[in-house]
Image (cartoon, rainbow, N blue to C red):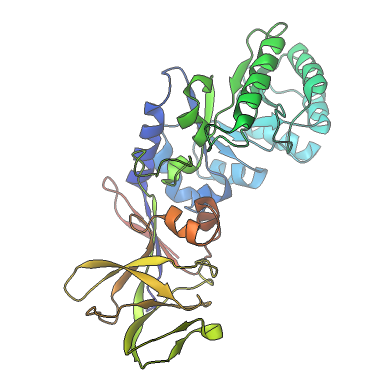
Length: 376
């Protein structure tokens, strides 16, 4: 059997949420970001471990409805808002919170309002402080805030850092200044307006800007949110382990080449292992000088380098000098190497590696407090 497996550790997720909360003021609430199928971890696996959050954030209606179908009662916020008037009506029917970042959404909210006691009566009003993706500009947001306030909505002014992972980047100071100036201006006519600025990196690097809500994402899943500290240094635990097994062993002769394009050549007799995982499972083809952890015949774990080019269904590693058996366990990322180390070798970030995994690997959910279960 091809034992390529994604293991999700629910206790690590719960631990990471508590680490995030330790960085917060007691009054600051946590919106746990579970978009993109909980960053590739699986909604069903992640939600039970994140119930200590104050709400869940998703990108789109299908993700919100998926959570609702599971029966969870926590507030759900559509962080990109709705994409049509019909979706606005669906959001009202299910009492989802919504971000409003453009004029059509504003018009839908003004034309049809939720009940006074509904969670959807709170609007997350998006302000473009410099990232220039979504959000109202300076004049437009004042007018939008006035109209929403007059219509009886509770406002949460929100924006998004562009460079919060680099604490000293000058963009951060500019965005913080703009955000707080606008917050003060809106509070002149809507004094109960709340605020949400910090993502995972902002929580760590800008504690004085946590305001009323933070939007925790990548840190929940055990990948580093900031440039100058590893996840381990921040006390975060990897919630995902990607693993496989050795499917073949070969001893190469001097000058033998390995894999497509003959990128690696033996310079002496050399033992290699073929591992049953590739880009068809979501492991990046472009990894350069990446390492894996492999367990030898005596139960000792070694870090060894990937050689040659990653293929669709397999990759090769240097096991010269080790006693390795067919079926030997191989960890592609998890505790060691970390997903951030692999991402660096692929020229990307941990977020992408989590989200690009395919449905081919088996999925396994583990928890100290709950029985082990499997999917696929």
